[in-house]
Image (cartoon, rainbow, N blue to C red; front, top):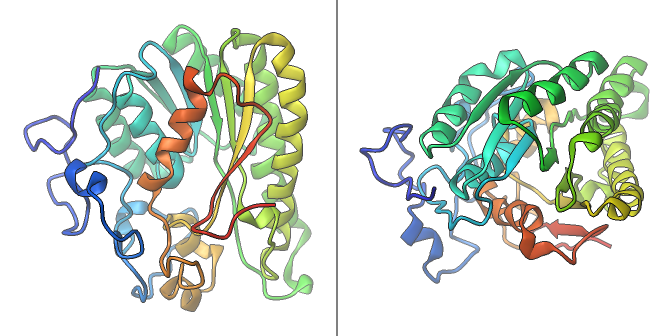
Length: 320
């Protein structure tokens, strides 16, 4: 089922949209991409971890009013970790509008954002599965996969996207607890989830992981985060070699600066959040809706000859 989310009469429509949030016509019309979305400076807006998209200024655009599907994932069954906000939310909205059933996992403290996404998924007439829990818990990761398979009647798209990022100015400030939690969120959970999911994936299924430009151009203040993102690239490339023997593809998306709660909830110093995206060639951060089509492509049968690849969406910086 496909539909244009810009219709105010549809269930799940967000009635109080930021004035700059795009309609479908806005997003697809030819325009200067440097000024298509908000540019810094942004207000100071520190949030407690894990942060909520609804509390950001400007509120990120995940495609709520602009993404329109064309049936590219009709009948598919997707599990997306970190699907309440940011890139995961944009992928969840896009997948539902392309016709897929969608399960999203998120921390229980992120329920307000998650509820809005689940409403948008259900508005497309597809199944929405609610999976609150902590991916640093191995037992929960395995239970989450089993529940998603049970509620959707299968699984053929797996998006491992949930991540943890915190800045530390000096190596002396990166505690063992910091390092452990970042690795468990970004690497261990990826392994637990993939290991639990692979036996359920049929030939033709797709696995997509979210890395970062940090895997290639690490920031001095993101030691542990950058380390895990490089690990995600290596793990996914190795996994792709295994899975292709089963007819399953695996690929990586490596974003650059994107306007998500990861940044305002301790991922960057507050003064850097106010200028976030300034250093990109665009002079602004990406909006989550701008990366959603890549997740759709990699999940779809149109990407049948794409596996073991890293897709950079970096605002002109590239990945190498």
